[in-house]
Amino acid sequence: MADLLPEHPDFLWRNPDPKPSYDAIIVGGGGHGLATAYYLAKHHGMTNIAILERGWLAGGNMARNTTIIRSNYLWDESAAIYEHSLRLWEALPEELEYDFLFSQRGVMNLAHTLQDVRESVRRVGANKLNGVDAEWLEPEQVKELCPILNIGQDIRYPVLGATYQPRAGIAKHDHVAWAFARKADELGVDIIQNCEVTGFLKDGNRVVGVQTNRGTIHAGKVALCAAGHSSVLAKMAGFDLPIQSHPLQALVSELHEIVHPTVVMSNHVHVYVSQAHKGELVMGAGIDSYNGYGQRGGFHVIEEQMAAAVELFPVFARAHLLRTWGGIVDVTLDASPIVGKSPVENLYVNCGWGTGGFKGTPGAGWTMAHTIATDEPHALNAPFALERFETGALIDEHGAAAVAH
Image 1 (cartoon, rainbow, N blue to C red):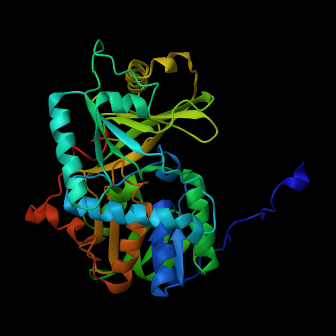
Image 2 (image 1 turned 180 degrees about the vertical axis):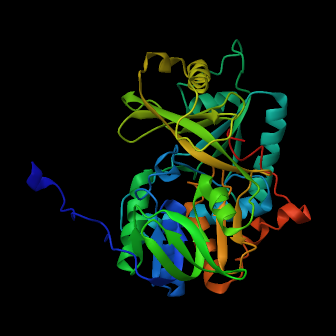
């Protein structure tokens, strides 16, 4: 049987020791850090790059999410960057030469109240104006698309309809990381695991390197792609970020026959569900209300999540919980990311994606690479500058972001 399996290398990337200096250092070996390094090397010719990961590659939020990919955000700025990201997703399996199980099975966002309906219909209209595929579904159409969903009127939160994006879907998160890592490594990027940044080297207000548990490393430019720990790193560098970090839990069931053909999200009752290729039911919940950096959360959140899931999907009452996990979501005041330059010269920051981090992986890497290489933001990430919290030009995506907000 082993002879029938495809050949697979022992390692997809090298594990080098850090060099004394690099042209650029990316702090964080998750999806955004890997994508940033890949696009820096591929599009901008910067190959003397190191990715520093304090643990193991993709051991943070990259492998601790529910893998949903969509672009149906409300505001023009958000729709633009997420739609660009979705278009990159559509080409990535061929570009990276890696089948990471990208499945465009569609995503529904349920509406349970009249306010939900008004907001959802408004968002569908905005999506269409921005060239994003979007539809409004009546309850009967929702049931036709997902037969196991309960659309009865005798439940606490009846389904009054849903937005639907047909091109949206899911991908295998750790495979995405491996695909980016392999290609970045082929382009000469050093991926250095078990290398924690403990401080920054500065010349006046300009960063010139980092201090790590594996020694001092000099760099021309440094980018922070550390999600929930971005505020900790920024504090080391001498400035504050307007983000809060919360635990966000998810879980999977045991394996089942395929019963769930699409992705269903419900902001109102705080649950979102898809079914993985192998058959596990993958479910996400709302955030724990406290701030923290732990990769686990309170049991009451799981309990409420299960109650919501069983009400919407009665067949799930027969499923058994297999395992749970938590990630650390970094949430801004307007539920939109921060992608751009920092107050420290040659130090760039990419954070605040909340629950949108995975879906934004290629778009974040693409725009971050442009910003690092040119020292100017790309048109897509210019609106997401840190300065918007001073100017008041906020991009309020609380309604369309996800249940974590």
